[in-house]
Image 1 (cartoon, rainbow, N blue to C red):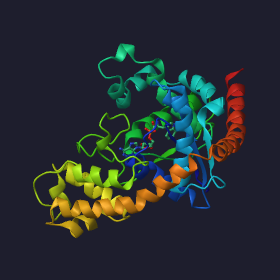
Image 2: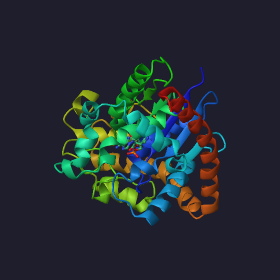
Image 3: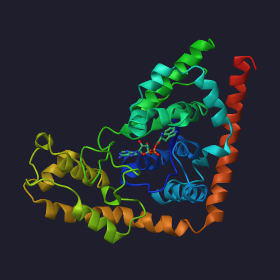
Image 4: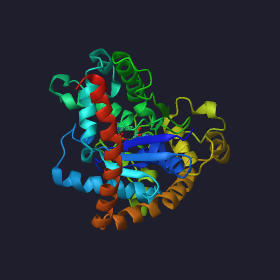
Length: 333
Ligand code: TYM
């Protein structure tokens, strides 16, 4: 069976190493397999759940497309489009929100983290965000959804919503139940400043993350300053327990070099952090610098990026509007 792959990335600027290793690297691998049909969405409607400057948002949408292409996604083989250009997403989100339950959404940890203590002042969009995400996925009969570990709960919710909708309208497989594709290792890249917190674009300190637009010197400096502990590197994986920074940096090294954590631990056992960090910087620069250069080149070619989005819009709109029409019919409209 051909896999129908769907995933999305928010165009909120500062796409970083976590986005790359946790998600985009896997998009590239999946999209290189001829058996797969891939759709990658720039989820601009999700971005506005937090305040955005319209001009910056427009640039960030293009930068996200440039990043997909610079990382290796071929727009001739995969559909790349932005969510707001396909009205079916907003519409299906409403239709599905009538099957989704408050109790399910109330359990979403990402909402709790993002809303913080100020839950009453959080936007309704931030709360119902996972329903829009379910609409994204379900409109395309997606079979597999590659994401980082932080999106696991949202995907479980998507499956629950699909099942409930199918039950509500009495058709078993009308909405396909998608499988999450979360890598076993390195699906959660942590901050360079605190190995217990996720690397994130919303973190205030820029040195907590490696941005995909960082130049060589910034990468080297950020790795040099990355938090470590005082012990030498361990000789077994078990010894990484309670050493979150060492585990994260070794994980990044393994993921970038496509090796296992086991092998990386073996390569650096007993060495001190300064020697390991030199190796880590080198492999990071080798991998990220060409991507950075390509993003910076593509970003000036607005016409090219807009053409890709327009082409993707036409293809995605056709699939999604047909599915919404079928939903309407089923629902009695
Ligand atoms: P977003 O834009 O926050 O992140 C995009 C992708 O990057 C992954 N990611 C990470 N992976 C590992 N370590 C990290 N530190 C890290 N930070 C981010 C995320 O898991 C994600 O895969 N809700 C989604 C976007 C979305 C979506 C969808 C995804 C909207 N609709 C439909 C899949 C299918 C989000 O905010 O991702």
